[in-house]
Length: 339
Image (cartoon, rainbow, N blue to C red):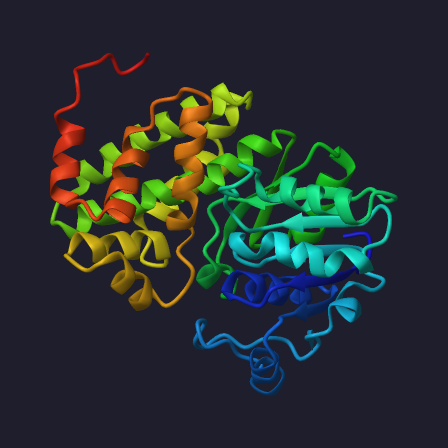
């Protein structure tokens, strides 16, 4: 590493705080922001996070609720808020962002109204609120559960940007002996993978909750990847991205891991709980549910068939029976695997 950087992590959920810890351990000057005073006070006084038991955070991390203070004189800003808050958070930060700022987004989702990815939302906000400046946007995505990153377990991730230099700066900053970072110029492909794989993890969880076995899980992941790739190809993405870490890598970990909120939520729904009950029991944001409406709109816009996504949508938003919908996937018209 060439030198220590000044970095602010905007958002102190499990993923944001795990990254803040890792960056501080890497020797960077790290600030962490949250809009919730009680959350910041708890982090300041305990140096622990309630959803990451047994993990302590370096005292060098500076915690604040002041957005201007968080953004001031930072080499890199990391947006780590849930996807539904990316636009409003970008609007809060915009007045304090200088020209040429590197902004890294680690949220995964698609905005339902605009069908924008997370970096596109940030870019849209900056163009509207700060047309006189330009920012350098990077999507950081891959098979990365906060519970493992916070415990220094070996992890790989992708730094995706149209700005090659910015992608490589982020690669350098986040890399260490347990975190290997790759770069990719296909930002849209990486972000589509990040949003869509959560939907497939919900479907996998539903099947597991209903008592289906590994065969069904493998089928959902494989056909789910075909679905995601089909959509990405129609949107002009690089097909190779879907066979990489942000694609199949993130799909595997999200659809199988005990740490996956989406998988767990689906599992609870498969066991017979309502969507509301399942979300409440998970106790954290379930991004797959947030992604479904936008995915259905993309299906219409690009005329791409997304049968698993449609099945999840009907379970989540139409209160249809998971058993009936899984059977409907099995009863679909016969087709060739590669079409």
